[in-house]
Each structure stands twice: as structure tokens, then as C-alpha cells.
Amino acid sequence: MQGGGLSGFQNAPVTRALIIASGFLTVALGARGKSRQLGLSYQDLTKNPRVWRIIASGLAFSSTPELLFGLYLLYYFRLFERQIGSNKFSVFILFSGAVSSALEVIALMLLKDSKFSVLASGPYSLIFALFVPFYFDIPITSRFRIFGINFSDKSFIYLAGLQLLLSSWRRSLVPGICGLIAASLYRLNVFGIRRLKIPGAIASFFSRYFTSSSPGPSGPLRRNIAGNIASNMGRQTQRNYRPATVVPPPEPPAASVETLVSMGFDENAARQALTQARNDINVATNILLEAQSH
Image 1 (spheres, rainbow, N blue to C red):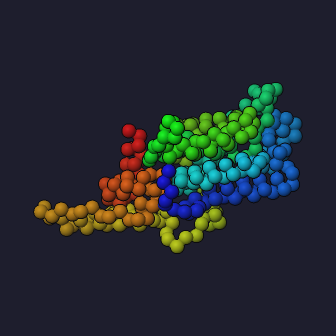
Image 2 (image 1 turned 90 degrees about the vertical axis):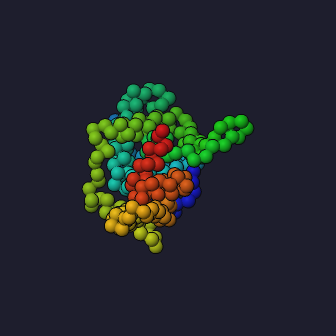
């Protein structure tokens, strides 16, 4: 995958909040020796349910290797928040979390007397839910062979996900599968979920307290600026048009190219799409997504 683009948590306040919450709870509970007690079981939900334990089990990992792989994948997948915006990304998280939690409860009821009766703690369902848009929406930009085996620039992310999925084996398998099912339902737009938006007050909270500061304008503002520039240049071209004059397309702004590259697109392909879309970054994104689907 391309390594350029926006750095850190710029334009990804929701991802930033998730990583901070997961890392803090994992370290805090691990220091108190409670991390190994977080895996939920059927008995935990029926005999002595505790709200704090349920919440902690959904965010805190039980070991350092799981924490490292889990936070790495969450950090990498921040590109989806940049791609669809923090509001829609929050809807995706809430929907995937609610559906996967319901599926996990059903699984615990059905498997209460089996070896799968205890679930691994940590945001497994969310991480594996994000593998669905990763598979469908992120293009492969390069391929290579190692010892006769074909790999792509996406292979390392899949291997990291496989390592995390098998980290606790039976305990992590069920949450991972539930997350994949939940994200698939979101992609199918069940109940029109993709049209929903988070209330402005909540969105403003994350934007205010978890957005990384940067010298440049934010992603949405930068996209608006790029769109306004392209629109104004288009109107100016129409006013000054003469049949004998060929007006060259405007040079794509570096910020727009960086934004598309941060979503996982190839830099050259991003420049070509922006040129074709006359620097409208939303149109360019659609061109790139349509190109990779064919």
C-alpha cells in the first residue's frame, strides 16, 4: 500500500478515540491483573452481568501481542474514516458493534457448553468488520512473488489480521466472524443504514477533542477548497472559451493527491482521476473506485 498521504490521525478523530480508549483500558486493566478475566462467557451475561466488564471486554485486549496487532490494524484502517467521513464512519462502527454484539450473544447461547463458550476481549468484531471494506474498496497497487508464492501490497494486512484472529484461537474466532457478518450487512445497506448520520452534537464532540491539529486545512475543508477551485476554473473556462483555443486541464492540487493516496490509491492513478474530474475530489474518488471494480 502507498505510504504517503496524510500523517497521524489527521481527519480521523473517531479512530483516534478508539485507539486511545483501547490502549488505555488494556494497560490499566493489565496493571491491575484483570486483563485475563475480561473474556465474556454465557454465565457472565446471565448470572452476574456487569456493565463495566461488558464495555471493557469490547475494548481492552488481554495480551501485549494482541494489543500491538489490534492497534496497528485500527490505525491502518483510519483511511476509511478519511474516505467516507467521520460521521458515516461512526455509523458504521455503531451498526457493526450492535449487530456483532447481538450475534455474539446468540453464539454464546448456542455454544455455552462447547469449547467456544468464552470470547476473547478486545475490539475484534470491529477490526474484522473493517476487513470487508478493505477487501472491496482498497485497490491492489502492486504484486510480487516470494518463493514462488504470489503476494500483493495488501497481503501484509491480511496476514496481520490472520495473526490477530488466531491469537486466542477459539476465543477470538467467534468475534471475528460476527464482525465480518455485521459489516457485510452494512454493505448490503440493511434497513437503509448507510443513509443515517450521527447527531451534530456528538460529531462536534469528537471533532473538538480528538482531531489532530495541523498547519493545513482539514480534509473536508480541503476538499471543499479543491471543489471550489475546480468549479471556478470551469466557469472561467466557459466564459473565456474560443473555438480555436484548447484549454489544458488544471494541475491537480498536491493536497487533493495526498488525500486520495491516503485512501490507498496509487499516486499516478489519483492524478489522472483528478485531471479527468477537473480536480473534484469526490468525482475523482468515484472514478478510482469504479476503475478498481472492473
